Amino acid sequence: MAFEGLADRLQNTIQKIKGKGKVTEEDVKAMTREIRLALLEADVNFKVVKDFIKRVKERAVGQEVMKSLTPGQQVIKVVKEELTELMGGEQSKIATANRPPTVIMMVGLQGAGKTTTTGKLANHLRKEHNRKPLLVAADVYRPAAINQLETIGKQLDIPVYSEGTEANPVDIAKQAIEEAKANHNDYVIIDTAGRLHVDEHLMDELQQIRDTVQPTETFLVVDSMTGQDAVNVAETFNNQLDLSGVVLTKLDGDTRGGAALSIKAVTDKPIKFAGMGEKMDALEPFHPERMASRILGMGDVLTLIEKAQSEVDEDQAKQLEQKMKDASFTLDDFLEQMGQVKKMGPLEDLISMIPGADKMKGLKNAQFDDKQITHVEAIIQSMTKYEREKPEIMNASRKKRIAKGSGRSVTEVNRLLKQFNDMKKMMKQMTNQKGKKGKGMKFP
Ligand code: GDP
Image (cartoon, rainbow, N blue to C red):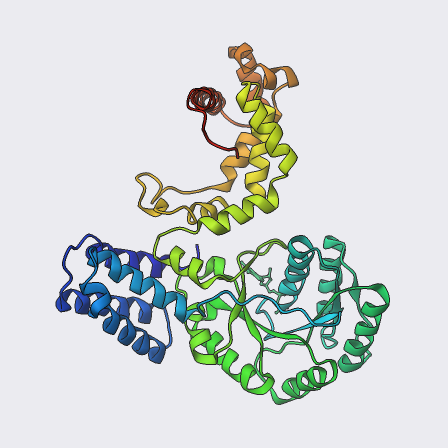
């Protein structure tokens, strides 16, 4: 999970000061010492840590804390605000050119996730902004790179412009923009060549492409798991190409967070997106405040809601609400709901967005295994249609057959049926209450 190590340490540290009715200079010193260690251990740039601690210290022993009624809480607010500021403050949105197409140039070292991110970004623009992107294969040195982009394009059903490996990348980029104009593509995303290390030839080529196509955005794709190396790469690319933003990939596996916390401070370029997995929908706009909130264990309800909204079909949601009201919710509906949750991403990531989830008994060390959802699906799929609608008819022989069909145990079948019954009871209670008090919950 993203930032796990750092989050644990910071949360333990702020927990100690949280409830304090009086915060002394000693308390602040002790806290900042621990935060400093936690950040250094997270591989945050040394100078960035120094400045960060200085600002937190100044504010934490200042008037805003001492005069407040809840000094402990106030200190935490200061830490959160400074963390947010460190990652860029406000969210930096993707820019749009005055006259289409908007050209986005993707640059980065090999293996950082450039090609994958090019596809993810196109998918994001289409899904969330209703755009019509064109992808451009301008990495002519590796035939595999062109194939990879073409495969991604096919998978997403998004067009890819390519001229094979013989053409010149500058010409390809120029031609692609003409093609986009002709086909009314409003975004052009250029996947440029990468190298294992920064080299002069590559930088020359990228500069030529940039000078020719004058992109609205030049995004550097960096692997967050490489920590300070990612920051150094960002600094070099920024000096040569004057980036407009950074996409941090593999944040899903980055337990430390050093790159995320240092890049903005070192390069003064905002993180625009974060890659959260290998799948094409695993790209999130980067919100510094929400990220700070996640790191400090305060959850990220807004992202959770956005994910739900983009995956859940409104008509389906209405139908579901009605089914809950008249208690006609069946195991088939349950199966459908699970499918929707699955689309939102790995369970573990979703749970980390719930405020305080990491402090909840039982949740903290629970293993969120997405396989369990698959098991439940297998069990339900092994039932007949009638059984799914009327689980009360279930007897021992039916259960045995279902267990066998799904490759699970009878105990698991029983557990699922019990959970489903409990859920139905709960829905009944909630909808009854709604009737009585005139207000209630909205589903989902
Ligand atoms: P490129 O050489 O920079 O074009 O890198 P690729 O796009 O080929 O990606 C390299 C590897 O990183 C592939 O296996 C991707 O699936 C993986 N990858 C890319 N982005 C992410 C991410 O955000 N999370 C995870 N876990 N893997 C990613």
